[in-house]
Image 1 (tube, rainbow, N blue to C red):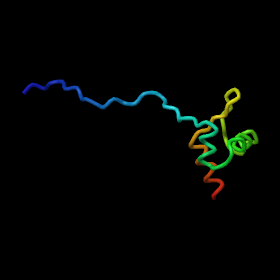
Image 2: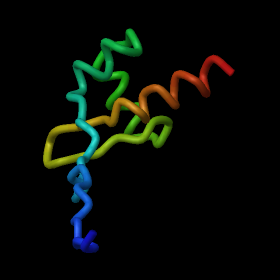
Image 3: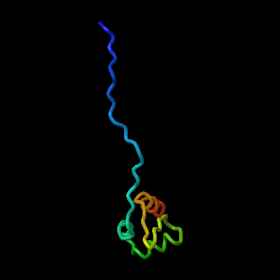
Image 4: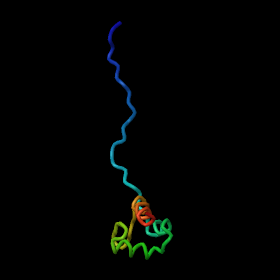
Length: 73
């Protein structure tokens, strides 16, 4: 039998970075069950991490979860 070169098929690997979806203030505030303006104040005061883009605030769901964990610990 001849030894044939057989190329091994591998599943495609994911390439690149998939960013976490950013929540709008209203969405994030609804998760925490507080007023959106209160959430924005918390972000301005550094109590919760938010991203200020122009006049808008955005929040990572993971940051909201972490904040909830800290508050309930």
